Length: 208
Image (cartoon, rainbow, N blue to C red):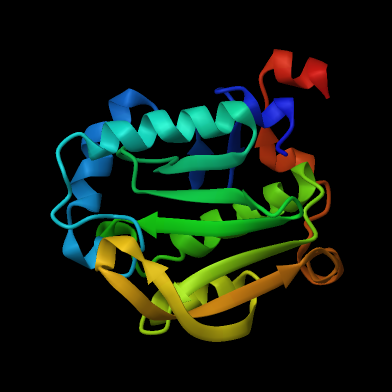
């Protein structure tokens, strides 16, 4: 579903403070460091705790394969200034042909600074701009107030609440399902000149 342009591993998004780019094997230590923390894993459906050895490398390989195949877009988050280690990830996965599901995780040292909202908003813009998706969905644990606030700031509204599977947490847990439709994004959230937010390789530009 994602076009050739985002399947190139030099594809990246720029925000005021962040780069969002494809993950690389060199990122594994930073990813393992924050994914190993219970405060990061606790509200996720897939991050095991304790975090098994080699999981960061497997995440990177899977993300790169998914990006290359065009079935998802998974990017890691790095600050533009100071230490450039990965501080989180954000992803969009194809669901049912016309829907994308949003997911994100952020290291604790980046909490409370608006970085999750900044990265998520850029990814939402990219998802609608690069695909024909009619809507995006985000599933958030009811207790995860911080993540609920992030998706609300990005224009999502609660569509339903109920039990959903969380394999890494051992079963069914109560989640809010948030929804953002394409028309709502166009009416209120679409940035002007979105392409200015994406820095593309010369080969990617040639393919557009």
